[in-house]
Length: 337
Image: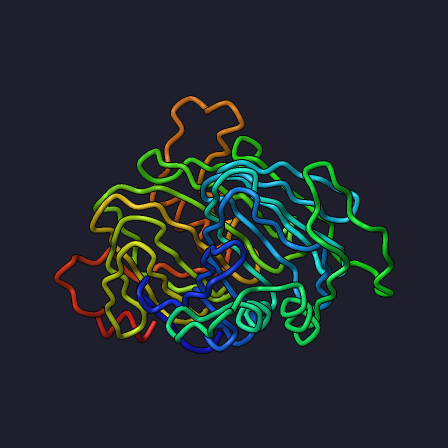
């Protein structure tokens, strides 16, 4: 990613999707230099994808609410609220929503947005008379975007057809429920959950999820190795990126390329999903924080020295203290690094 990008919830493209659901395009390739795309969808119980395979992208789905069954190759995963599934390219997969659901999806690299835009209907445009998503329109959009539809949606007890794509898969399907995910104790006793790390995605990206109180703030800092994307699932905050200041509400997101100084301060309690690409930032939290799956050492605390040491070891630089809400920009001397 070569340039910052910020968008409020109202600026995301809204597509009508399966069973009258909605697919939001939060990020497309034009915003990320082709590295990834991000989507947020709302689907009723019973909505289901056809059995299909991607030739270009790995797909990641996090269940923000509701539940779904995912099939990927010979694997079947029942994923509940807070759970995550990694669906690699060249491996046939499908899903069926088992209770009304809200989902966050990623494709890496980008490109999946072409399929959704080709088969869905942009709600900002007049709806053509008689328009609907059909197997034919989905098949045409899939073929134009490097996908192959293998068969109809699966029933609750269905299995994927056995096919050969002619190309060896380079990833392994993976799913984890919330209680199976790594969690690190962080500042103020809050948890940083790591639903997916580089071990699960072949080093492509890491996915974090956390809740934080109003007033929580990061120091002014810069990443040398990873681009960072922060999505406010709820709450609000001020984000400083380079020489700019942005006020974001729920549904807003911020893309910060590596090498660009940034900071944030939350103005209400918030839930945040963060994506870093490539993977690697998880090692920062692991070094400085505490794995809550292990017994808490006597007297353990998260210190500024521990954060500074972990930052230096993982390619980050802390440039200065957190900013105040009245600050209009990162101080010029910090922008110079």
